[in-house]
Length: 459
Image (cartoon, rainbow, N blue to C red):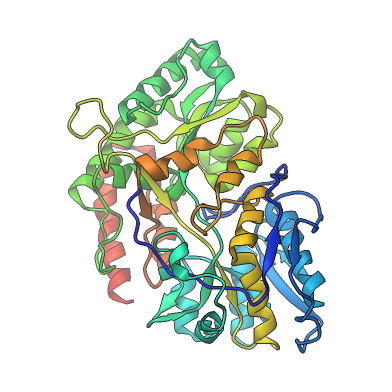
């Protein structure tokens, strides 16, 4: 994997973790963002503090924590409870839906009450850092010699850094893989996906399933306008295009290779997909779980949703296909692309006890906490080398494709700018004409590029 090593932090409290993998009771994240599974149980004996000296040193009895994924609650509470046992400070974790999460956080930042600790996302980080609403963690990190920031996945530290200061610690990272329904492939005599699949192989299999399954109402694949990180973003970067320039000043939606990727999507995959009206009323994830879609792209944060589904024994994963640019049938450097992202643990600047809040964040982000997170199946870790346990947390389901792409593929960071949501949210609605009328896709993308450039010019 192409890496730019990063810098990391940590806990004043040393945590000792049991390396015994625990079964995941994990789940779904929202809005195409990083997150996903959460381990079951409240056992804390595998994550104990090495001393009791921290008890009594804090000025608060409880910290409030806000997250947006209920499927991660049990696992994170498990880790938090171990910290509570050592610190004496209770941790109350509130789960709020994605849209309400940001509405409430913004209201709190505008004069209301913010949670002590909360998740931060690449789409929103710049706004909150610029508004001086997040605690500057530099001094706390400097005093916390357990871990260095270079132990984290490339770019995730940078997402939550501004003007040389750190405002959130890396929580996790994610990658994209191909999810398929073995029962559908078997029924229509189509070979299962392999790691040698190109995008053309993907399209051919999708077309066969759609043709043979037409009478049964079965589609080969599905991908909606809002399936960005876990959908068409990967095609754009795999084809050599971009969504936004490196300096974040110009849209890439009119880039030659971007247009090539989007037109290929329209020409080669749309005929095997449900129509746009269907996908706008029934999410592709639900269509897949209903046995109506043969395969699709999915993020690692979604593993538990399919692991706990009624027909999970039919589901399997393969590496994301690659774009065979030179037609030699071999995956070469840069041809297999997976978008990646990572959440951050942030602290409100006005929290009553900054040290207590930081120490809790440090417990979540320490090597021990990150290992425990993976063991519980909460999600893949931001700490390098701690995610292997995640693939063992879901008995009977092979999740190696999510890690394999890091070794034999190229990871591309989820594109962002200061106000990502303004232009990324536009894709969901403004791409619809291209989904409904594939022959217009190129013109639709060029029009979006103009609008996106206007937005970027205002940042």
